[in-house]
Length: 220
Ligand code: SAH
Ligand code: DHB
Ligand code: MG
Image (cartoon, rainbow, N blue to C red):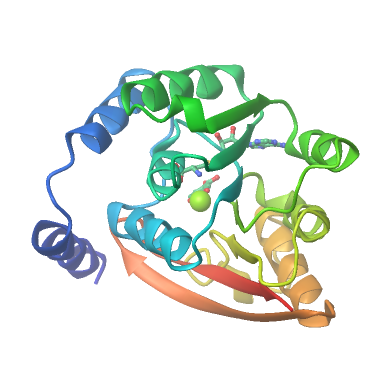
């Protein structure tokens, strides 16, 4: 089945996504820099881009930059006076992302903060950052419940929050799992299920990046 998922993703990309030398260069640079190939897929990146445009997002927050592949998709959706804050723990990932965002001509829109995302999110709140229109949470999964809570404090009525990797090839069903990422993902579902003032769903995805899924939150 995974072969079929990948082949269909290739068909979708070939049919619907124009050739994209900027994205190709970013992925090649990430590979050369030995970053793990755990970026969103092209079709998923375009999906995030469209969500940002459909919500007319002017302020975007990303938790987990890696080499900036999803960052480029999101930043491309911004108007010229838009702004994207992206948070990354690993200096080498951040340096690679910086180069990719520069090469993409998007660096002037981006505030990349290096450090533990929990600290950076607390710092943003302490700075009195204006609410973000769209937040993409895609860093260390054990901290997802904390990132959700912090993202909510940086949101307003109508803000959208999307969390990546909430299915993990079905791993989310394993209530006895000792994997901190699964435990964190299940804790995220618990938090989403009890959080007042939001409307939420989760969508499974298959494709070039296997079987996984997004949770999507609308702040009410
Ligand atoms: N959003 C990227 C993929 C992110 S992969 C894309 O789709 O292109 C997850 C990233 O989160 C990795 O770069 C990892 O270094 C980073 N990360 C892990 N723990 C973190 C933490 N505590 N704070 C901030 N970033 C973290
Ligand atoms: C992993 C992290 C991700 O954000 C992802 O999309 C896929 C895998 C990981 O840590 O394994
Ligand atoms: Mg991810």
